[in-house]
Length: 387
Length: 177
Image (cartoon, rainbow over all chains, first blue to last red):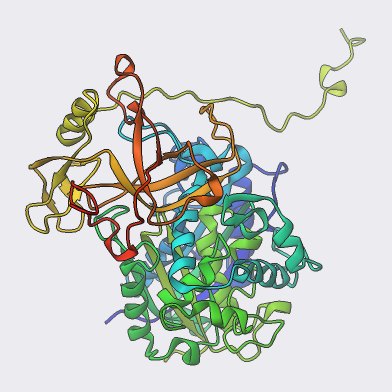
């Protein structure tokens, strides 16, 4: 059985289109310093550093972790880089947690980032390959047909994605760190926005952001002495499946279902909608909310959209299971950091430290990330109590 | 010397420069894609069958990702296919002359059990639907190369739609076969 570990410090940057005032090193250091401050610690208190970011092609800087050692105060300390595409922020937090749960280190710093403005992340991975036509129209082009298939199967009304797009931006307007600040957004505005990859509209898509997120994870002894309430890590799980295999259910991937079952079992969750107080789930295109509501067991197959439309996932509508109170990926998307932001925001909720997007009395929260062709999954459950 | 103006006084602060990186790759196809590319140069679409689950992969990568076993048996596929899903794209692709809006579809050729993406054309965009029958439109033979682009696009066929539960399960002879 793993040792207990907890999040004792969280640091983020303000998410925005372009951080021209800092380099990549300056960006990650800002998040790391904020996390150390939050934990009331210094660089000397850190035993090891775990770094994550999405593919190097996004900035065109190869193995950036090597040059970031100075900025992250880990010269002469163990450092590890994690790679799992868009889910990497979540996987990085899990790798960091495992280094404490295993007893290897007492206290680790984990940081993930993306500086999309340094290059062109949307097209960086759309290179021609001889055995395929050169028709890679970005992530939206990949996910749009999968969303269309979900709409067909579930018979969901056309405006479910529009509702999620509004709901997450209203959540984001409560979070001063969120990139998009759209407190007056309406269903009509989303519906009228440009159809990029039918059925995905512009405002049903995530923005391109610069930003970094960091956490300090400590063992039970140190977490108990921490100045602010710790977020106890109650379950951790990662699963993956191949991008392409015959018979793959791309709408409701098995790896996602298996990952959720594993993390719930560890955390003693039998009914996620009832047992959890809130969730931060990776939703880069709005239709992924109803799809993941089903994949993660919050709703029966084909009925995720009903929760969304009933306001169950909305803070503003007093929903019983608010999703993405921080505004989610739809409000801020520094790709490599996006997964870690979900994990960190889940931790903020159970620490009672989420400001204007706090779910009152939140005790148990889910952090979720997915990546690649919806094939890499990372999840954790954090709680205000040890068990 | 002391009367010369310090050069840094009247210059803007430079915080970044554009420095594009050009990477040229030599693609090593490997055994299965090499056979696939050699066949498509002759205008034939081929897949490989998994010895364990019998699923036919196209383009073959030399293994069944589901069973984790190598695939050997080569299977000739039809150039008729079924639309599994699709998107109508309204933005251009850098490095591709195609003008939006255009349809990218996941199509499953008859005889295969997995889709690949390709362009749909000669169609009314609003009429395309899941289960639609389509057929490859090839470039002139003189232009055939070791590339999937030998197929210019797929166009609608005047055939009955494939029921959703049979998409990706048709024999090489098609729906009636």
